[in-house]
Length: 390
Image (cartoon, rainbow, N blue to C red; front, side):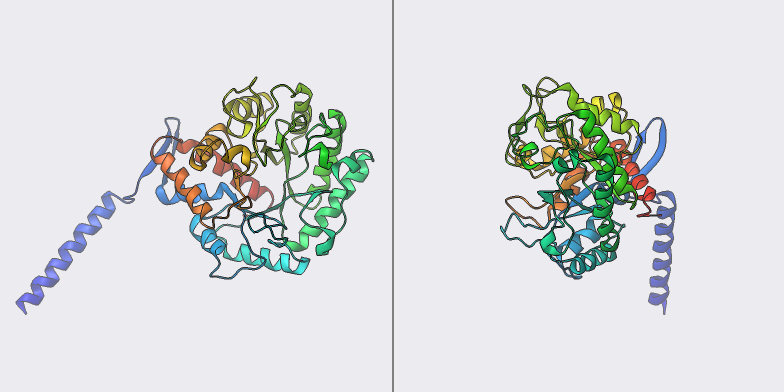
């Protein structure tokens, strides 16, 4: 009996000590003071959750289950968004995420069901050559931006509305369109050459782009203008390598951005992986504070979400390491990073790796916690604005 009493006494004492410790130190993990002027603090867990929301990721599969790798990443990383494709580049097969309307709807329903936080479900549906929702999968025909550009503004608005009418039943809430690149070089292999520009006239680009945005907004779809600061004069494809516009870029390429941002209707701006050494001799726009912080934020006054183009494109991967480019992009001002997993290789753990890189960079002082909180707040506000979260 004495031994039992001693054991009970010891347990009581230890419990008391643990309670005192928990009272004195309620959160034993790291906290991050945001700045002298702000009192907000976040824990490691909260920091990881905010970082996860900064990622828009791609994955393989037309259907998912609880055991799918993407479901694990959705739950563990708290991914902010998903991007859907119809063609799978790593396997060189024409079946990635899109087979028919019913299948896409079920896939998106399941993605949202497994997500820790409601997702941005994004797609590239510009029309013409760049439209993941093709006629052969059971979707409507959509003209290219070039074809829309020779028509009326009203027709462009109607095209965007008809296009996004399909989104409502499917569950897609974000479209990375319209392209606002000015068609400076009609032979441009990634813009003019495949009819992605409305016009060579920046005023025409602005008017058609605004109508395209308004048409999508009629269906409560988030839009993104791209590719900042302008990809229209390039001679190279940034999917394959660096596109240098130092000698070809024209100031008029900024006109659509300046005018559209002033309307207050721009939800997101997607950056371009282009080099202009007259502005930044070292980094492409996606990784450049000169382009994003100085021009886009300060000069043009954009306050919404800045999203990178795919961080696995050749213009990034051939010149910068995965970790290096992620840190540079966030410090430059990108709020969300696209990791498409749809380049030459496929890594189902890429979202986890990206989250870990950003988390460690904050702990090591390479990225400030303010930058993460700033990005997270913009993402949260956008999702609330479109009733994706309450």
